[in-house]
Image (tube, rainbow, N blue to C red; front, side):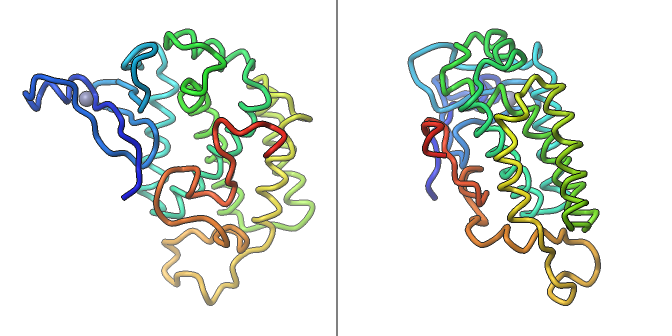
Length: 228
Ligand SMILES: [Zn+2]
């Protein structure tokens, strides 16, 4: 499968006893070891090999939140996280100087504007946004007033993060545009265990691969803001 060659957690690697750096194939360009609290990625040579998450508990919480979404809702939960992550990518590309992102990058020993820092610094907001998207989908109320109410709520949270609402709203509108119609009841799972994502959601999204492919929002880190 296509993926990224990502450095394995140093302590997990030690346990393997191979005596040299261990790399693994990962769908995303990073991986998190919750057991040892390490973030690692596919970068080589520049900056730290690993980021210790002890000083960034919000990134640990975010990863746990992502896992819970996947455990509870399966691929649908993973895709909602992917959507939220892509929205945060859009925000970071336009606004890399958001204070909490700069602070996290520095904590990690990374430059705030280097692309490598982006997935790590936006992870907490991506996970929180995924929670808000889940609330929207679970509520199943998608008319204009419902969408406006949801948007206003998320914008308030965004402002609290220091993300410019006017600059970042477009990404949320695109997401809402794809999720404004629900799946007709008969095609949904009868036992209520599934999540009925908006009908526009799955037109492009892939069921596997990195977050950038699991979302219908196909922005990529490194893309110019004008191309998004
Ligand atoms: Zn580990």
